Image (tube, rainbow, N blue to C red; front, side, top):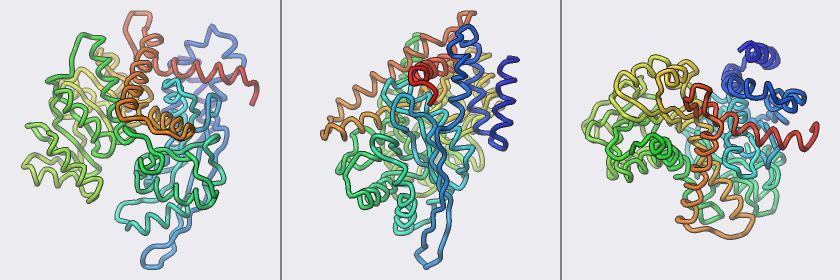
Length: 445
């Protein structure tokens, strides 16, 4: 622990005022530093120190015009963290909370996540403090075109391939891809998450949610359990939550919660396929609030809270970082929850994770469990390069195989001296080794 504290003091001094980034690095350091203590090649070359320093950070202004003719200015970012094993790969997030600390944490996590997929993908992340909520399609297009007018010079299909994230869906990807094509005069797979009509992959919208549930199935199977008949609590109501819910329904689980920034709904009868279809219309087309679900179907809506106080067997936090706190973890355990898998990036605080691991809860971090999205993005890149399109069944089979391989890697590196399995340790060490070995092979670059 002394080596971790010393390492983190240097990280904090070098990156002041970036708490999200500090948290992400510490979680990795606690697993990796003990592992490399007796491996001089990693220590001598200061691999972990080098991994925490982005290869490149790009910050730029994004001026755009509202429908009423007013000029607005936002800030754009791209953090190109690591290209050791492939082109930078990671999403673009449009949200008022976006800042350099958040994007460095996400890019750092992405590096390990992409490594775990075994695909040739480096780590990156980007976005803007622009808020898409309440904006017209024309205003969204104005912003996206302005954003890409600067970003295009820093990305390419063989260099950096962004995707979507919070606030960036099919609409935003389409506007940005169109502007990139216009500026570069080339049709290339520079963005993933594209519409199927212009190079997108089948299963890409579903991939993160489906992949999360596929990983949970392997966790349960290892402990002779099944998801059939289990009660599941899900936070969020966006892309990841929607498709995790869809896959849970398909496999016989009963999902009872969804949420957004206003609060959560609790449907004791379970959210079925028809109710999910309503949620998709509400969130994807009408861009409404989850409270409308409670009003339509006559269930409870709890304002200003997250759903971790309800009785459930499995919890899938799919909203945003640090949404599940220490007290939430205690409440979940008290109410019978035995499995927690992250659909969002770093949604559980360090204190919550410690509670889960100390109480032998099946807990797996997002860098392992939500890697399905970037895995299918990698498959989309392959299809674009080959100028072909795989069937839905082919992509889904490849996704299942990737999630199984990630679970196998976590098992390989996750067992502790006392025989307990830590998915956190397994994911961190498994992701680290591939990137570290590639960095050593390539020299001091």
